[in-house]
Amino acid sequence: MKKCITTDKLPLPIGPYSQMVVSSGFLFLSGQIPINSATGNLSGDGIEAQTEAVLSSIRSVMEGQGLTMKAIVKVTAYLTVPGDFNAFNTVYATYFALEPPVRTTVFVSALPKGAKVELDVIADLKS
Image: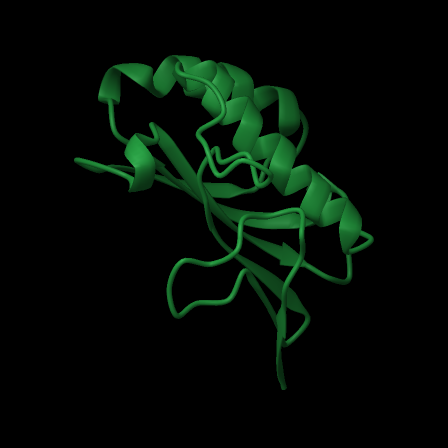
């Protein structure tokens, strides 16, 4: 069974997609950019601040579902500037210091609202 979940910890979807879906023991979180859900504006200008904002938002969502960041088994990262890769990794490593999830990093030409980073995750509900 598939269950769609909405939370006020994330911006409301601007299209036909769900914020989160739970299915087969996993939580699938749609791509998150560094948006302040209260204002709808980007949080931070640089890659470090934007990465911190996205990961902090994801952590908040995980906690709201009774999970920790250790439950995340897969991350897909989208970056707009290849030169931001090392700075992104520095912030990312503070959230996933031990036994990090598998990850794919893709460089894209643009992200919504001019964001520099977007992350989507899959978490194991049994963790």
